[in-house]
Length: 534
Image (cartoon, rainbow, N blue to C red; front, side, top):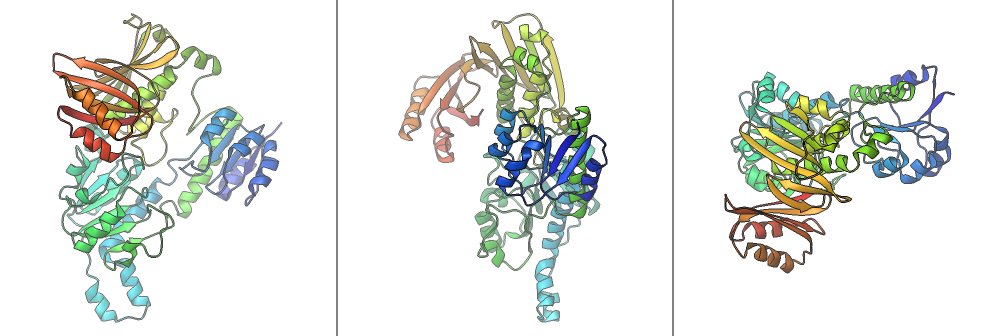
């Protein structure tokens, strides 16, 4: 029986033909389907290929009783209900590399256009204005010798940096997961923080994901670090730039202008303040991946991935596919989930630019096939760093290698104080930071943070507070939370007597806002406050 594939959004004709030519695949190309029409026919298909138009809802997945895979021609999978796909046992694949060059080139074009006033000068010519006045009015900025800050050095950031170097720009990069060895290979200066990268920069380009931590990462304070007359380029995600702060910085004359392909609200209103600026500004409607080549690439890639999965079982760029069969998953129990929680903790708490991630298994877990556990931990550790496509259990090792991070796995059959223990440790030179988890009774728990014993859940919203080890501080923290009407669901306290400090892990019902975080950090005796959602 042939495998049937439905293509419900436009993709490359080459991709459709690639599927149609295979003797074991039947492909139907039906675009513009209503949700009701899609639900009515999806039960006849083994795989579905979409772009962004088709919404793969729980209803669609429930109706797809033959459906085994959904392929997304592109990076984002916001139009696919991943939880429903998981529940239905449907693999979700994307094509994270197909638009790398397209996006890098578009971001570079925005920089060039803003530097030379291309948009404004074009309008001056085509509107029949004074040609000579336009020549004198639209004085540009030369990029030769300028200092470029690249925030986020994944595939797109690296491609942008290569092009900037060809323009004789001095490139400094900030990426908390970029190692010094990889930075040396890319011939870029490695900055320890966004502030270091932006200090004295003439241009900044952003290539990072949009998360709670990166929202408005380019704010008024960081814009002020850049050189007078600097340019801002954002072709990654709307919301990374505080647009009000950017407008104020341009109005004041400190920032010369910007090139923007993405916005906090899309579509942006015609009255957006930035649109009223004349000099050194270029705006495009989310065109980063909009080239014939990129569209063709992602169409061909998704067709190849779906073909290979249906015919040979090979899986590439799966967003939700664990690399273990059902029996192995049962044997591993909660350890994949524990590893994911530990990975998120490490990503939040450890120093940037790690050299290696070490994962060790102690006790009975050491005798099992732990590849999925390691992948789950590595994926969670890396996924907050990537703007150019989701990290998943399939591609996480390749992503780590690309970033210069070594994955070291070790099994230790000797038991610790726990029957089984998973330890994950980040190494950067002489610095080491570790966390550990296990199952106590039937409950998966985080039991160690940086050699301090704790006992807390592996999911939820948490505050991690380091403070002087003296009376009254925990009470002061509790009072501050109570005054803000924040309910404490669970609390674990660990003390380091030799160093005179303590760690308090507080589980709360909702993430704590920035103002309350600032108030907690200002309390006497509080050394550090971090919020994390596991």
